[in-house]
Image (cartoon, rainbow over all chains, first blue to last red; front, side, top):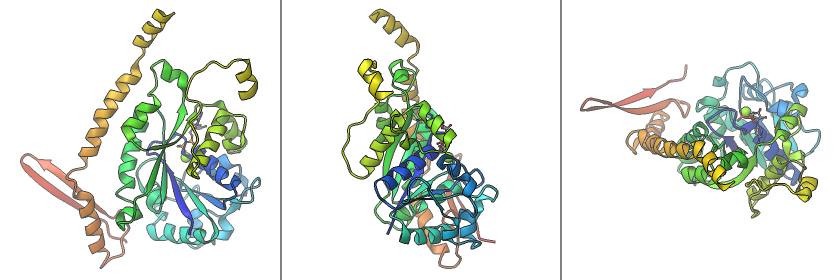
Length: 269
Length: 81
Ligand SMILES: Nc1ncnc2c1ncn2[C@@H]1O[C@H](COP(=O)(O)OP(=O)(O)O)[C@@H](O)[C@H]1O
Ligand SMILES: [Mg+2]
């Protein structure tokens, strides 16, 4: 049976889709058969970030409603044979996502794949609750900023009460904190919540810290998951995060403002 | 240099304020959902309703409202069309 991971946050624009694309690609690069599903019905953009928007024929809702089978809707990644994308529909409304419908699709995918990554929409309504309902693990994406931290806290509450694991009294969802768009310079100046503050308030296991990086915008412009930009700090931080998810114990990087010497400039870029 | 840094920090330590506000807010949010038995009550109700009607997991909502000295338990059950 596949492991289902939801990438969630409550607040929009914090980096869920960026993370879903990078994380899924990272798992595929480690050799795992991985599918990443866009739950943002009506506002799809995972396909854009993955660079497969022109190959979308059928979508998640088509499959749920029986207009297409899973095989017809899955898009195979051109860079990695282990990776597939299940796009969201652009037009239909969110009520198309039902517990039963999503469950059936996940069950079918579970026979083919080792990891199923669910890119959640913002908010706490149907799209978001459907994305987390069947999750085994949750990656709570948080920016070091008041509204994002508050929304993450609410999302953590919902994960522990409204998921299948909660309803069926199973072992709870494993929850991990991923802090994104972190800027050590701004933390140093006292303008941004420090990592320790975010951790203290949310008290979750930290799976990674992704620095604010122009590489993310460049990657989305090109339709390439940023983890493939191996030179970039954000790409490296996402690789570390994948390694930690798979059980490796790595120290967190890119947390301080140490001045780049000549050496650092040459090798970090 | 050190003195300069000190003034700069004093001027813009909005992060400390953010942390303080968040701690209160989050504590309130966590308490705010009403009595602690509500989630379990909601799950139990859902299970009972599902014996008779196939409803979605978010079809049942449970809320406690305070009206003066009275507490009102509000149930909302949405049946499928
Ligand atoms: N680490 C980062 N550094 C810089 N920009 C980022 C970073 N992560 C995300 N972004 C930008 O933030 C915006 C929202 O990201 P996205 O992944 O679409 O968020 P969400 O899916 O949570 O709405 C995008 O413009 C993206 O390029
Ligand atoms: Mg998104």
